[in-house]
Each structure stands twice: as structure tokens, then as C-alpha cells.
Length: 449
Image 1: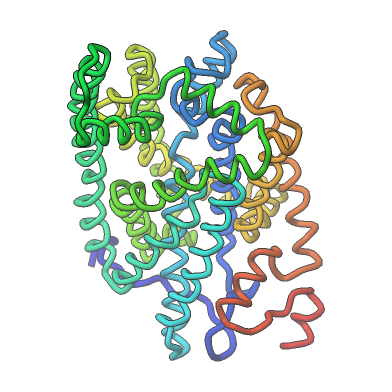
Image 2: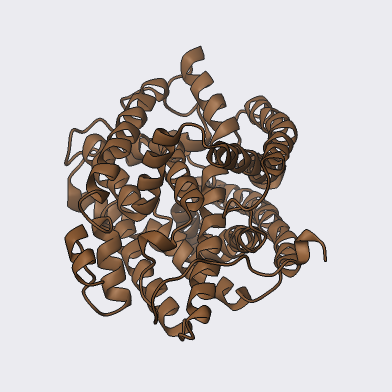
């Protein structure tokens, strides 16, 4: 039987019944990867914390066009954009395999617990999105996780085939959306000409103008749209919440249907396969991880360099991105993500940088708390109800905030876990999932064994 047909790799277990994974049941390699992923995500998210979202993918819109600012965008686009989100999605699928295999080995019924777990994550994500930061991914991951659960017992070969088949669907939907927007722009231009000539518009034409005004900031934002965004996020907390609510709702519905199911779902299934094949658990050889790293970088990085130069050549036109401009990053980000995984696993497998890897592992064990901490800290720094720096910090200097937060979490996470079993949000999540207060302090854990 070849590698791709292997059964689930064994998952260490202890005790009886179903409960939160304990320290002696964890794969350190998965914790390290999750820590690297959650901190890598911040490198891109800083753009959405500090500036209007249009500047996330268009460095010409805001953030400075000097060489060091544009260079920062090129660097982050090539090495970070969608790469660590891809790893995070894969690890989500890997975690599902670990929990499912562990539950089955104990004869426990996992489905009810898992869906309760996903429900609470869905709720945490909704609270995060509506009340803290618009760029929440937890809601999406929770919703898609409920779907991929149905594939948990599939063989690695099946998971990979399904993932490869559904990955392109998001691209096709994006292309169709771009064609629809093109037609809408032409139609709206004609209606506006009629309106300018003094012609009385009928109800249908008025409705189309209203619909376009609502969708334009996402499809074809203008300078006025960006200024409106700046004004809102430099305002009060309640102004921001009111402005953010319809955007979050739109993302929860349309991003899930047109992107999440196909892209995130596929990556979760790839992660499930990689866990079953022993890739994430560190069971493969050093040469395997070295080849994985080299293949990911030698194929993916040139593709990403092309992506960056191509987008720059087309002045980051959002409709061009939806048509064909996003193709290189869509595929290249997955390939480079494999390179990143190979590099991290190679470091873990060879025992290099042990102290640093232990810090990343601690960050990974508190990934949910650390992810939410990014939002709390950086919205306070940039939004009007905090220090009000929104839209005023150039892209290069935003990286200073990234380094500061990463340094804080690499220091704080090991300190916290030396005293407590879980991060605070992880503890709450587990207590709600099992509908029972979990031991929190380390001495509580010892006392209950």
C-alpha cells in the first residue's frame, strides 16, 4: 500500500471518556505550526487593522508609495498573503482528525460534542466580527468545519481528490462575479446618464442605483468610499459597530458561499489527509520535509513573484483580480504554504531552535486567545475610540506593531501556560463545549487527575 492509502496515524490517548486534549496527548509539531500560523496571519491582518480594506490588496490606495512601503507590500504578498491562513485551515482539518480518532479509540460519541464545539466557535466569531473587528475568520472556519466533519473517515486519497476538485470552484465563481460587475457598471452608467439628462427614473432603475451604491465600495471603491471608511473608523465605537454590522453580515453569507466552502473546505480536507499521512505529527523523515520545503519554495515563490509584478502592472485593478489576476496567488499561496510547513517541520524534526519552537508551541496552544488579542490590541491602537491612528501609519512602519505584538505573545504565552492549563478563551470554549467547568490553573489539573 502506498503512502497516500495509509490509515490514520495513531493518536496518543490517556484515560477514559471524551474531554479536552491534555498536555501528554498533544503533538508538539502541530502546536508549533499553529503558533507560526497565527502569528504569520498577523503580518497581513495589520493592513486591515490600520487602513481601509481596499489598501490590503492595493498598496497604491494608501500606506505610502515610496520604495520601502511598496517593498513591504511585495515582501508580505510573496511570503505571507494567504499562506498562513492556508496553514491555519489545514491545521483545523488536522485537529478534527486528532479529536475524532481519539474519541473513537475511547468508544465515545464525538459528533454531538464536535458540533457543540463548532457552535460556540461560531458564536465567538460572530461576537468578534460584529463588536471587535470586521476581518473575523472564526465564523467561517466554524461553519466550514461543520461541513468537513462529514469527511472525517475518508481515506487520504479521497480527501485530496475532493479537495483538488473543489478548489477551482471559488475561482470560477469569482470570474462570474467579475463579469456580473462589468455588466452592472455599464448598466448603472446608462441609468446615471438618463438621470443627468433629466429623465424620470422608474422604480427598477432607482433600485439598481441603490443596489450599486451598497455594493460599489466592495466591487469598485472610489476615493470617496475610502474617505468615508477613514471617517467612520476614526469615530466613536458605536459609529464603527453600526457601520461594520452589514459588512460582517455580507461576509458571513457571501464569503462563506462563494469562497469558504471551496477554498477553506478544500484546505481543511488537505489538512485532514496530511494528518492521516503523518505529515503534521512529525512521523515522516527529515528528507521528506526537506523535499516538501524545497518543492514548495522552488515552485511557489516564482509564482508569487509573478503574481506581485502582474498585479502591479495592472495597477491592482480589483476587477482584474477577480477575473484572472488572483489566479497566481490563489494557487501559489497553497504551494508556498507547503514550503513553510516543510521548513517548520524540518526545524522541529531536527531539534533545532528548541527554545524558540517551545515559544511558538505555547502560542499555538493559545491560538484562539492570541488571535482575538490581535484584534483587541490593534483596534485599540488604530480606531477612533483608542489612539486614533487609523490610516495614518505607512505600511513599512505598520510592521513595527507586528513585531511588537509577536514579541509580546512569544513572551506572554509560555508564562501563562506555566500557570494555567489553557488560554482564557480556550478555557471558556472548552467549558462551554463540555458543559462543565474545566480545571484552569495547573494545580487544579493535578488535583483532578
